[in-house]
Figure 1 (cartoon, rainbow, N blue to C red):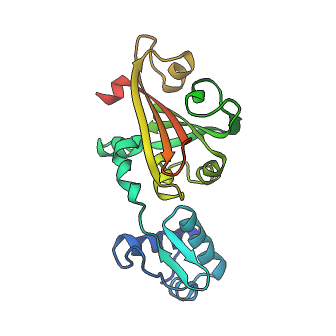
Figure 2: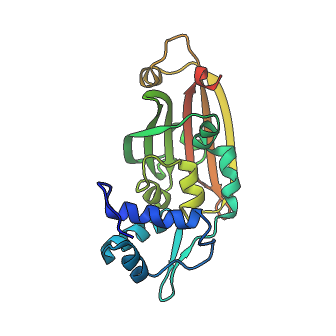
Figure 3: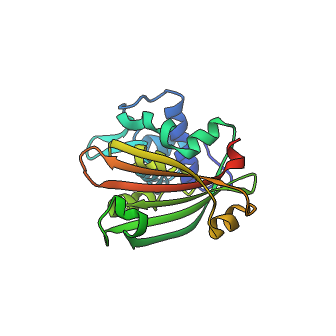
Length: 231
């Protein structure tokens, strides 16, 4: 099978492997074809195959076992949380397809409202994104992570759901999720980013995620959505 086109070869190789898994040809826990087999099947080099497998491993789709090969990852037992805590998942079910634009990626420390979960000065990673649908900005997302989780999430594709990366792409098993939704007036910055009038209100979803073996949270997310998009 020769793969062609302008899409990078490792991406095409990755999509081919994902297709095998999604079609059920390789079940969770089963071993994937060897690098050599994939090279011969797709007519690509070893570096291309390894880049594709490394990307899939980082995303949590496959697991590499030294000396044994590459296996389809077994979904985390916490995956069922995603319909409850993922904005992307919920909006997709409503027929709204999202695109994400990263506005800021930085290292920071806990302060302000973050002090309800972390001690003052705790080192964190911060990612700020705006979600759009059909070119229209519909949500602002501020996410804060512990340093180890920040390393994983900051390397993920901007199109990926934060909740999905945490549930499927990291080693953390979720033990507790605290959420609240507040209806309020937007700040001037929020009004500017999502392009709404001064008399419009927003829903502010705040979510803390705790790993099952940790007392402190590993992630805090604040998502702001104009109420008109939830009608």
